[in-house]
Image 1 (cartoon, helix red, strand yellow):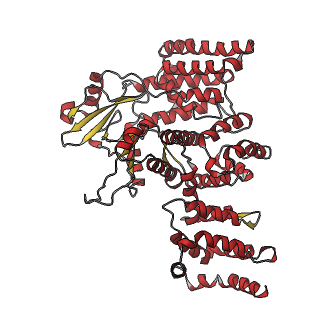
Image 2: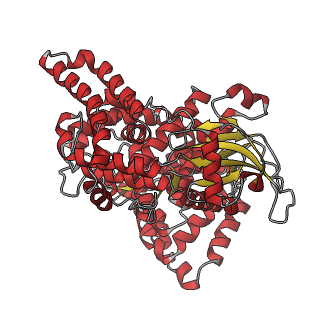
Image 3: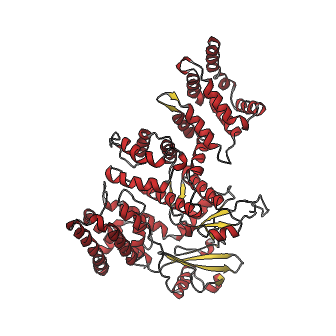
Length: 585
């Protein structure tokens, strides 16, 4: 290990890997022969199907064959299969569905060797570190295995131990994959608009991050900090004194797998409550924090019974009535920048509002299409594919169906899923599948869209406020129905309160930043040479039960108190214009 080129740096460096194995070709020969032996049979089978015109007849057989090959070849190839299962731009639907079946599980390695790794990494005996530890792993995966243990100080912990000699195995496989990428692509069912080696490099980078347990510990603490004010989300504490690059000791979570609905009900948990926590926390990761858990499968999410958390001084705070959801395994994480988060909000709103031209433009901004792509022919294709999927009601929205349909669209048009969005797609589809297994009648949009609507209406940032204006105005005209829909949908979110939203809205309206909106509202109210009293009446009917004149006055007064005299006075010309128009009528 000490002679390995990446033993110190531990970052994915394809050039360093190539130099190392390029000088030691004998290390790659046996592995190459093994890989060729399995894939030669697969490729010949594909060509044989073409010669006999039996591609359609044997497509499911070939997809299953590929899955079995990847499973047999071990950890790297299992991870490849999982990564490809999130890439509808690269893999045909038939192969995609089969690769999704890959399970990230392997037989455990010997515990004596695992304990030796612990002692070597932490420089003390297992008995010195833990007062007790399970003789066999309680879980085994492709990259490591987990033991249940207890510290001498009494804390119950999980001890995650990485498989021995994993780095040389992974680097050798990545070297061979990258070498093969230059000539293998034409033989595979891939839709490529770029160099396949870039896909290998994307995969290698994330894989190297995943095997760095110190990085995973830092990810867990960052994730916990983002949700420190959310009592419904639980993140295990990291015990840094007993952790290293290959060993991670973390708090043991006494949770229930979300797929075990019987145990969940016996523990007093409600499946719909856990689904709501999962969807809302997932959206907060993507649209607020930009730091998201990319692998929320059932083995990484647990339900915890209702409990009373403690504050910083170990005093009980309010009870978490619906229970908690615990996240574990923070090896596969990613970060989104502020612009990407805002463009994601745009895309969700444009999708729900069926603005396919704007949605196509969003795909360019997000990197799914290159800036020089002519989106003209793509707009009707989006409408044809996505229009029927969404249906007449937003409640019909389904991420899995969208992904399946989109895989067909991406194979016909120059789409490419950026690496970050491959992880997002994996996260969303996995989480929705888990939610549907808990409640088959669940609709993710019933939680997701109220959250997005609430975010737009509260407008915590100037960028979000500008996006609300973009939503409310189309071709220079105010869209009354969209404002009604946003308010109606946001009110289905129990955490949405109309009063703070009204005060924020009035503050914005009276500010210099709201000058454009004031002018547009006057035009909207007087559009087509008439007062739009019917639209205003409908909006009032929508919110009147949540407001009373006293509250509305207080909200307006609070908004004015936040502004300078000049800022409040800036509103007067618009109000005067509206009053004058009303007098004429």
